[in-house]
Length: 109
Image 1 (cartoon, rainbow, N blue to C red):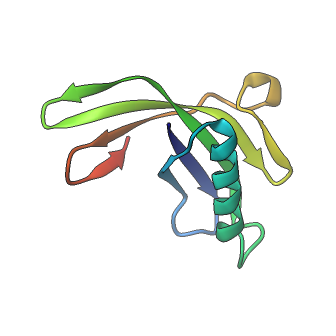
Image 2 (image 1 turned 30 degrees about the vertical axis):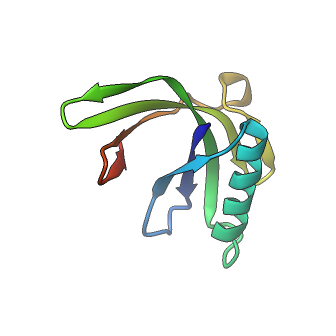
């Protein structure tokens, strides 16, 4: 399965956020891979990452003129204290993104 890891960095970082596509067998493996990314990104500065979201693919891949699109929606969120559902009950707003790609390049909108 495809997942996207959204990383929101603290205000003092040059890059405010980034999206990374990962392959995982299921959501549990996606959590493991996201935790590994968290460790790497906070190795030099434990407060470098503000939050991280695991985003799951929604629907089918759509063909556009010259590229394809995949929609992703956040299902889990992690702040410094651990993973929780990305929903209003946990004071998290909805977060979606679109991955656009062709044979040569991939980008997020």
